[in-house]
Length: 155
Image (tube, rainbow, N blue to C red; front, side):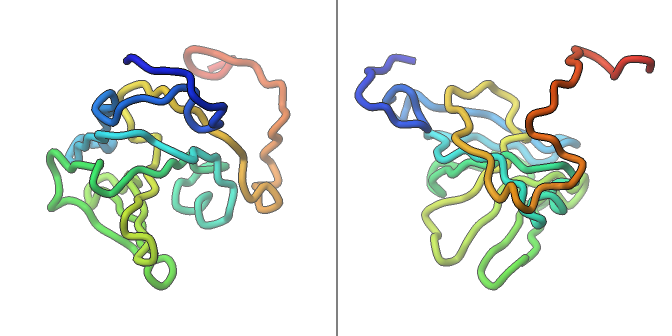
């Protein structure tokens, strides 16, 4: 990728041409495969109760993509959706239940991509932890835990 430093934008460290971006992703079972042909913006770690429940984790890492930039390569027929609030839908694989993206009828030009489904590295980085007052009580954002490239110690 070629880019020029033009701003101190916290979402992208460099400005790139739209054609410089192409990310690939898939659900856990591989039935849904997608490509993103554009940047991922406003990446956050969301600790709200809805994101925790839909991901089954302490937080969900999400980023905006332009609706026109997301291409479902295979598995369109395996995409299910749940309307979590009026006009807000969470899209997932019907087979393995992997969260894929969410959509909002009030902002149809953007989708909120679940970054855990990406199979390729991205250049963008998270900009914040959101809704931290709703975080799980066992989640310590500042914990100095051991880090491992495999299972936890003792397993």
